[in-house]
Structure formats: C-alpha cells, structure tokens
Length: 110
Length: 121
Image (tube, rainbow over all chains, first blue to last red; front, side, top):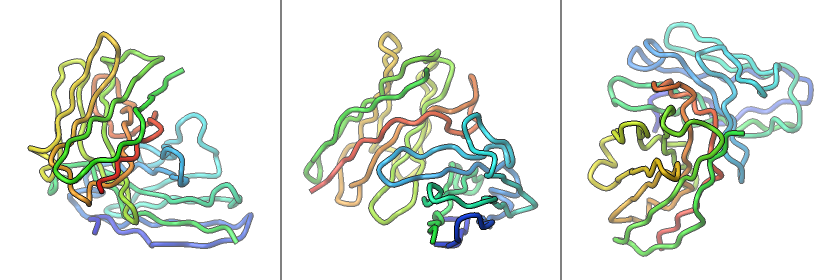
C-alpha cells in the first residue's frame, strides 16, 4: 500500500479529457516535486512529467501536470488509444527516506 | 544516443543470489546517478535504491539493505545489482534507470533499461 493514493483505474473515450489524481502528505508531495511515469506492459516505463509540470523532450503535449499542497494531477487532454497504460506519480518521502511511487492508475480507452 | 541495456532473464531458487547488469552508452557514465526499480506481478513500481557512478556510493531503502549490493565498473560503463537470499516475492521485472540530474539526484528517471525478469521458483 503506497503512501501516495491514486485511483486504481479510469476510462475514457478517444478525444476525452482525463485527470488522474495523486494524493500524498506533507512528507512527500507537500515538500517535494512530483514526477509522472507512463508504463505500457512489456516496455520500460517512460518519464512523462517531472518537477510537477515540466515535460521532457519527446513527451506529447497532451500530457500536463500540476501540484497544489499535498495533491498532484496528471491531465491527458485528448485521450488517444495509445494512451492506454498504467500511470504512476512519484516523489521523495521523508518519512520513508526513499523515493516512492503511487500505486498506479490504469487508463482504459473505450 | 543514451541507452541502458540489461542482462537477460534469470530463474533462481529461493535462497540463491542474482546479479543483473546494466550496460550504459551514449553519455558520461559517471555524471548521472543510476537507480534500480522493480515491478512485481500485480504490484506497482517500487524504487529499490541508487548508485552514484562517480563515487560508488549507494543508497537503498531499508527493506533491501543487507540483501542488495550495487557496484559499477567505470571502464566499461556498467552497473551491477546483486540481490541475495532470494524469496518468492522477489519475482519481478528489475529495471535500471538513469537520473536526469547531472551529479545530483533529481529522481526524474529519463532513460530506462529494457528490464530483466527475475523469477524465483
């Protein structure tokens, strides 16, 4: 059980806007920046967002991130079929003295 | 271009040890921390720890301390993760990943290995 909570799954149709939440605490999101990773089974995870809201080169601009207090969000604007994957938020946690991932959210494209 | 290539799948018995290698190329090996992340069946991603390839210093979460060792060979820009006293619940895909921060840990992993499946059976 992760110290950062994400919804287990979400669904949307192509073109829809999907928002994935990540709820933490003072010891993680309240103090440190959040990163988001996309993982398609059978492939290596991919960095989507770092530093709360920055996109690395190669990450599609339909992905955006934000953070406020102890919560963070990843928005997929204009869901596409290739976005069907698992999404993880991640941040350093002082209480655990380690880098922690959320439990992950599986996004299904209907 | 930057690349991490890991060693192949392993099948081990409980109590045994496994070594996973992570061969890097395309960037300054000693300038970027390498991290180890695993994905167990039905579970989420789990950060295990990291190595500073410049100094060799390592840092692991408490649950792996005493069972894991990570070393590096700068001459061949390769890191090695040894996990000892394997248990059934160590069955997972093990990834090495590069930290995007130069000479610092940002914990934004921008380059990943392809993963190594370790099965304890």
